[in-house]
Image 1 (tube, helix red, strand yellow):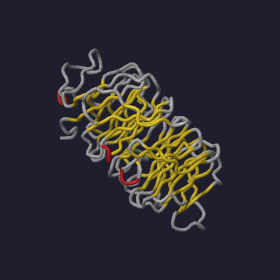
Image 2: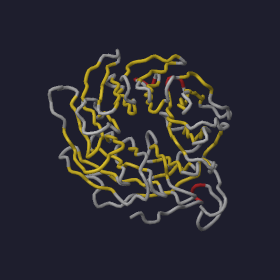
Image 3: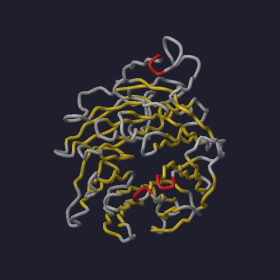
Image 4: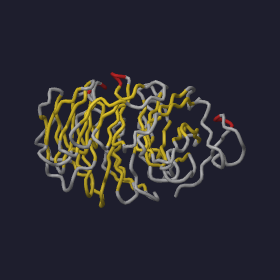
Length: 368
């Protein structure tokens, strides 16, 4: 399915001719990289907190660490310790604070170094979190139950009749609906009419992530079956995107909703969702095989640019339409576990399985 894509090393300031992926791993001169020493613990989430100008990272030992977005190579410092493993997170309303879900069934909020409990389930893991800053809403899912809280912490919506554990949450861009991924599809709930039945978007199989396009036109899921499914919200038409060699762990939309990019292949794949959607269009691709597959993707907050993190620790930043990429971080030997851009698109943060954190400053626009 995924044909070879063009790659112009000269245009990216990379030396050499022919296949630029052979031999040296040269960091682009358009990127300044700072690496922190490995913590030695697996990171479970990576979030940028704009209000504090820091990256907040959860670790498998229950520590919450933070790192300023400076290029000093410092190790992230512990700002909090929680009693269970943090497994999900998102920047809180307005980018101030971080919401954290744990396998102890708690929804926590980190503010500075203080942790407060917003909700607890009595057992089921809080494995999914979503925030809508414009409406001042927080959502979390535990087992088959979805709960939406307002900014004061009051429950404004709850639904528990999903067919399986909720595996993904996403608000509509206007914050009037929320979509929950589960086995055999997606349930879309109205937040303005609690009596309204959910819209069911059906497709057989286990849906493990969901993301609503920023323009509101499409809902896309990643599936356990190594494929994606996309629904056009206007008429609920479904489109299948298949051919991935491994599980898709991450999907990401460009800011205008034209492209959705995914992990799961040896290249970063981006589908053109302009017009009626991706049906009949081959994906655009950049990057070539190093020693594995793309594990994480993160779209730039403004441009048609995506960062891809590989299973060997390599991080590429590529321009979707040009199908070209530059190396922002060389292989570390440990799979990338998280990628996050700052809101201005000038800095990218990556974590890998060793617990190391890479801060990459973009010195020149990727798209000229």
